[in-house]
Amino acid sequence: MRVGIVGLGGTGSVVLEQLAHLGVNRFLLVDPDVVDRTNLNRLIGASESDVDKPKVEVAATHAKQINPRTQVETRLGSVLLASVAEELVDTDFVFCCTDSQGSRAVLNQFAYQYLVPVIDMGVAIVAANGNISHIAGRTQMLSPGLGCLVCGDLLNPEAVRVDLLTEFERAADPYIVGVHEPAPAVISLNATIASMAVTMFLSAAVGVPSHARLINYNGITGITRAAVISQHPTCIACSLRGALARANEWPLPARLS
Image (spheres, rainbow, N blue to C red):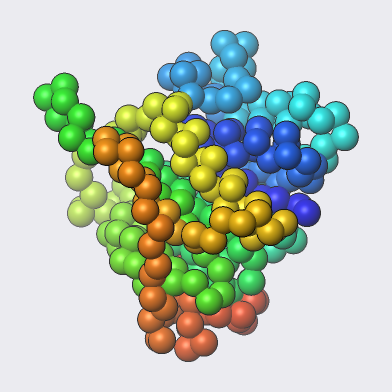
């Protein structure tokens, strides 16, 4: 199998390491960013000497250290660009490991439009005045027959709109206030959700008996719950009236440049 991983940060680097140990040896890695010193507390395979190197290159090196026969293609680019997203068509499975609503919207529709299963995941830590009030995680497979992120009302339309703006459009938009603040992240929580996602992949790919396709995790209570999202019959992303199996007949919700 050829597996795509979009986002090689806190969750993506864990997913890559686990898949490499499990025997996956063909990857397409996509990420536009370089390693920052603040990433080192949660970026698997990165060290001080990797600061300012592209995350995809650091990840590729780590995968080949695990298995020298691993074939890795890298794209130093954003899946928000249609040309980058469409390169994932030649993969068998994709992991969405970004924290961007826009990239989630692109990959959500991509899964149904091109019939390439995607597993989306995320971790959220809510803190105020030095106290943590919520720790939540989610991993969800996006594939025909399963409800998508749109059906589950899991995408913020305004955040998606802002993510899909060009830099010129963003600078000219009067409705964008303030700057994006990075969310808190802890390597153990990232690894918990990434492990759930990899096990979900193993269930779909090789029959490991784990039936959940949507898992919610409460890090404070320690409870995980399987859930199901019902498909909306007219959903723009996953229904027969929408993008399902349209392939190149429909454009992805991504920027052209």
